Image 1: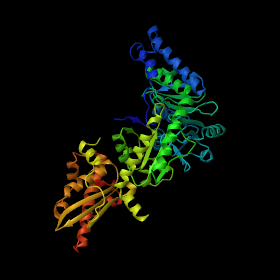
Image 2: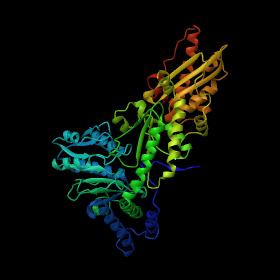
Image 3: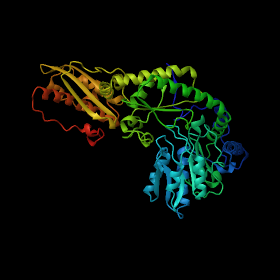
Image 4: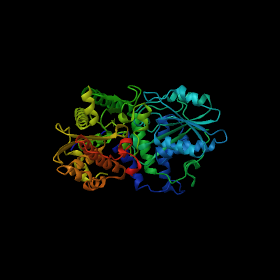
Length: 391
Length: 142
């Protein structure tokens, strides 16, 4: 059976070249990089080389890169660390209403322990207005956290504008760049970013490793206390092979970005046009142009997303949905609701995210399978039945 | 996460479609919650001769609709009224906890169709207060 992986926003396949780089550090060089003897130094050298590589990809100093266990840890560290270190200055923090749960849920936790939070709503196109962020600033605001690109609808946020606003008001600015790193060029200096989270498995690196960029001079408390790793800022024995993998995957993604993006965009655009031509009563979620080139997000009226995903899976297509049933919660995706979609339409969403290994040869199969599956579910939908009767 | 039986009834639903000569129709659920079930029945001599369903919902909603129609087909009206959501679940080899409400929706859809029939022949009906019409995710489902 076919296996067409269209869920690259969820995770990506580890690149073969990255795996080769990691291999020596899985078993051969098992020395603890914190050890004094020369055997541990091989591991330490590899980590420091990885740090240089990551820094060069984001235009920062290697001493500003801290390795973590994942994007979620980086987000938690950024938010909790700044809230703790800046609590004397104020207790107000700002984010948007379309953030990843790693940020949103951390904000809710900060609220629970006494911080004031403001969730700035995005526009109907899934992009926040930078001036709305500025309006939310108070005297006691200590942190602004806005994602670089959204994981569900791919919309790219006005990071440069928000960075300039944060700088003007002397407020720490964090961005969750988990979807953006390796997919679009990022220059942390030019964008006035103070803290930035990334995760290796989103750009063909291994799972279980991430990084946090912390601009020199930013005062931030630790999340993990213990040993003196990461220049005493992040305790825990270093995940050497993961760190090596993260750096190599990021280097390859940045090096091949233009080529990969052209390839991915061509396939994405063909699938989008094909679905729009074949399937009526659909809504394209998120801004048409200001979004990641790998992302498609549609709502198909009259059907439910989990059923769609399961049927596509039977035809060999891996995709995802923001329906309540697919998300294991009672409500459909907070991102789709933030766009102003009613619940019943948000339940029928489909996200397809393409990658460098997607093939133009699969476009017809994807389009036809999606069209047939949507039609099949509509033929058994009482909502479609009454809609057709009325029109 | 679904049993083989759930996947079978979801992928190959039995009795799906609009029953042209139905003399009873019941609908429960609401679009906001993400599931609506509509049951069509042709009832003659107090027996459910034919039954079909139309469902907007997830895999479990479609599978429970399919199984519920199978369980009441050929049964008397009284027998069909005794169908419980547990019986639907058991026949499907169980459902994940978050999907239990789908089986309740199926039970209530069957009842709604039968009440519609009883009313059409002039019988007095004391209708249940269908939990799933206000919201499927209420306490009764848990």
